[in-house]
Length: 388
Image 1: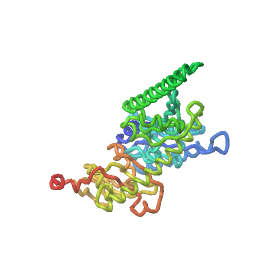
Image 2 (image 1 turned 90 degrees about the horizontal axis):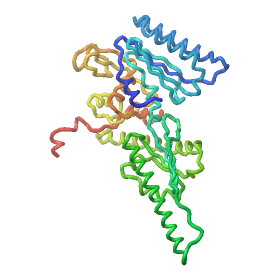
Image 3 (image 1 turned 90 degrees about the vertical axis):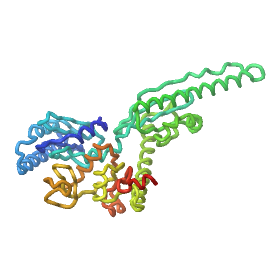
Image 4 (image 1 turned 135 degrees about the horizontal axis):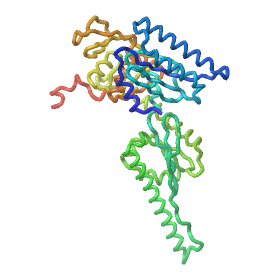
């Protein structure tokens, strides 16, 4: 299972010799039981990678890692339906492998100075850790949903005393017992709400989903802490006592899909609107690169269709989409990038910038398939504006 910390480690890695190997494996339904197609595909990728390294003057670079990846691939046999990613550099004794949701586009191999993170960040929308909690008057069941894997982690039951045989004189005991049951239920709801607050404060989840009967939801919802509410994406109707993991997963997935769709639409409208108002929006690669260098970017939006050549200064790191022999900032030597995407994503991960991958849509293509929501505008942060 991969974490944000793992991705951060990968983003910081650099091989000056250009020997950082990134291998992404997406299983395919085999046409025979020997899985020969997978092995042949990986062998072809490795052979081509070695030829490319030889042409680039890096003969032998990453050979040990490639041979190890080949051995790994021949033993995968579908990897139990999961995708896999391997990041390696034998020169620095670095090897990391992760199982992933089966959402990669295909099996691919890259050798460069940095690890290739685009396929990994393309599934980053499943990285948030969701807490899914089922609750009624006396029961609470806690689940985690991360990387598309649902696990029931804990639960507790509040044993509410049953009402006795007699309601007592003129029903007095019955009313007293019902009030006692209601008080016990409120106490139980409060325990669940406090436990959620404790979990969140300890970093146990990023987003929250609640499942409850409709009549119980109205009793529980007011007790949720104000710190928890912004992290909740919705609730669904279910019987906590009888719900199966499959039912929980289906209901949670439906809410998550709706949440992502609505948030993406909202982000797109906000970025475009802010850009048109000369506010906290940046559209197109030139403007986004400038915002990255000035530390303005809060959220990076990138389409699968985005690609653009650029140059990067080997001395100061300045990136420019205009081709020059020397860096426009420090006059240092520049490196040509056939596609600036990896640099964008690596910079975003290193700086804790949220990455949102946008499906190919015509409106986004019109603004260059790349945009950013900004924390601030550096060119508007003047002393006069601050004083005003």
